[in-house]
Length: 160
Image (cartoon, rainbow, N blue to C red):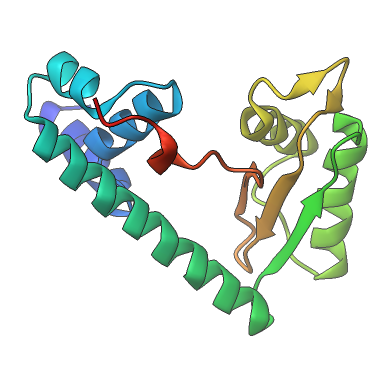
């Protein structure tokens, strides 16, 4: 693959994302507890730029969540929660069963679904059991999104 082909593939993936790589990087650092000043120092940008990027990222995420909710209300997406205390294999089975019920063919295998649950749960799995609730959305094209439904409020961190 030539450099221009790699760049086009990267740009294609990026254009489908609602967040820039820099916004993702900032949100991840905020989740780790970094202040905006600490992030600015690490990334060699102003604290004001960090604030702007973070605010835009949160606005984009909110718009995306609203769009998914609207799709669910319109019946074009299936949304549900995997309860805390559910074994990861039972959680994967529920995702697959919900897709079957909606007559949607998933783009992921059972192993892929299990991996997605692990990624969404992050460090909230103990002994193969979910320690936090996971929100799941199955789209009509078979794509699945998952995240911990007990989101940390990034605005609660000190500004620094």
